Amino acid sequence: MSARHKGRKRALDILYAADLRRVEILDVLESESARVAKNPDQLPAFEFGATLVRGVMGARDRIDELISTTSTDWPLERMPIVDRSVLRLGVYELLAMPETPTAVVIAEAGGLASEYSTDDSRGFIQGVLGTIAERVRGAGREGFSEHGSPASQAAEASDSAPQEESSESGPPGPEDISPDTGRTA
Image (cartoon, rainbow, N blue to C red; front, top):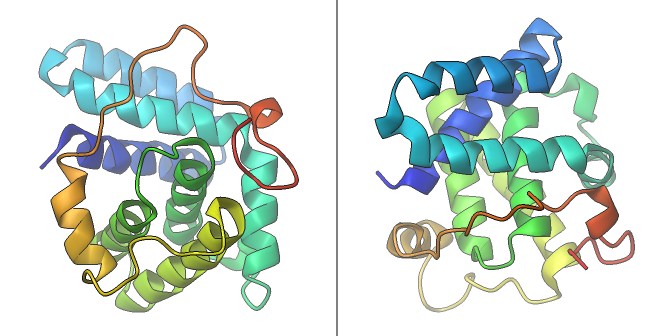
């Protein structure tokens, strides 16, 4: 299991815990950071997860707007916490991490939904993310072609996807994401 996959799980845990307990995401992130400091082998996964969490925090309004305008029959506030958290992570990756293939983002989100929610949630989340991907990454749904399913492509690409480099500036914030296209500037 790649550090990025583990990082997504860690990010989901943090977002879910904060939403469930109705506490600040940053408080849960700091608590998890202290725990990981005692387990340095978990650091690579945690660093990627923390990048995702900080990104979701910084672009939350834009992320929630995209989810809400896409999922008109199922309002954000009525979604199960797990589904809402998985969607927020997936939308952030679609917006701010163009180096991660769309198929990988959607397949990983579907995998998290299958593991932590329901099979129905998997299809719902993948459908919402697919629609958002078309809006923010362009008309074509790369990865959804004759080359196989998103899940099979994700399995191949997940472990070989480029790792994000650390940057002093941190993840893109809401000011870095264009309101017109949803992409980072």
